[in-house]
Image (cartoon, rainbow, N blue to C red; front, side, top):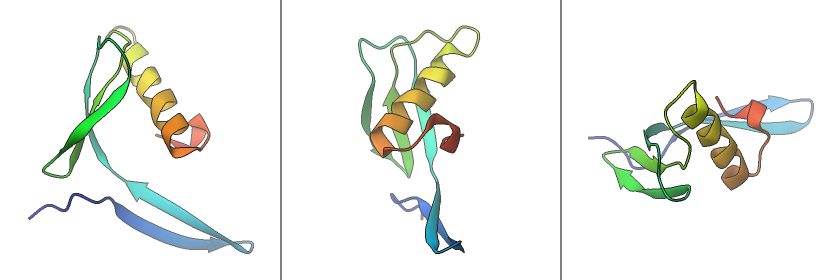
Length: 77
């Protein structure tokens, strides 16, 4: 049975604890606004306002998740 929580990977680097999490996301482009709709079977359902053209929806998803998580865009992939 799938968990509704991401898998965490903790590591130690120069006195800092680094947390890596892998989540599954299903993206719905062309939404009125960016928002997390919910979680179904361990998959986060996310609506983004960008269209699915030339990677714009993917770029918007990365920017949105980085703002939610409080990390830089380069830390979300």
